[in-house]
Length: 79
Image (tube, rainbow, N blue to C red; front, side, top):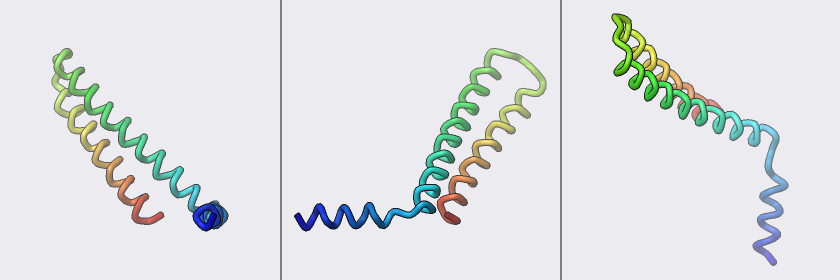
């Protein structure tokens, strides 16, 4: 019974800010997954479509992924 009381006390101590923090971090994780998909799709596109701007598009997709990772790290650190 003591274990159940401790769990109940832990649930009561959950704050609104804590819930919002973990929702934001979860959203940032999904955004990183999206950025990974963008990098993969740009790689497939540049293999099938020949263009002079392919290296630029590839670089932008990698910059986007790095920015998403930096935002995730900042979100975890700041929140």
